[in-house]
Image 1 (spheres, helix red, strand yellow):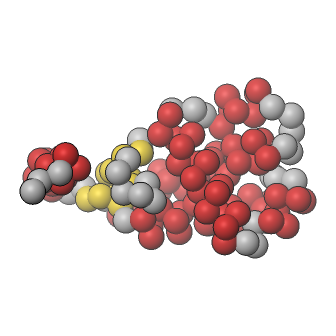
Image 2 (image 1 turned 90 degrees about the vertical axis):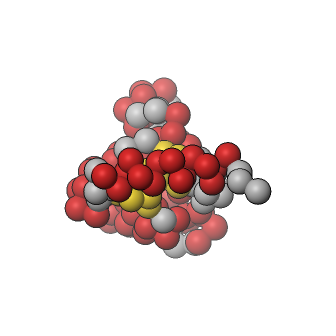
Length: 127
């Protein structure tokens, strides 16, 4: 039995291959978001409370989900930060999103990745 996702992957595989692209793994996505979290915590771009919680894996997973959801929806970090108070959880998550976007450009370009999977492997994220 072929699923809709399986069919889409088969059809996209050929087109992506011709362009030298591949689909990113969940591990690669997690590494990139983790690096963005570490970077913003190290620069003081987020609140002390956020930085303190960032040592926990569950917290990092929640931030990853938020970042990828915002990215999928096409919501920029600037849009989020304009709508909330500085150093609220939403502001801090948007700071991670901004860093993720900067890292994303060089990370995925060097690796030839095109489509990014969510943790449940059913959604694609924008480049």
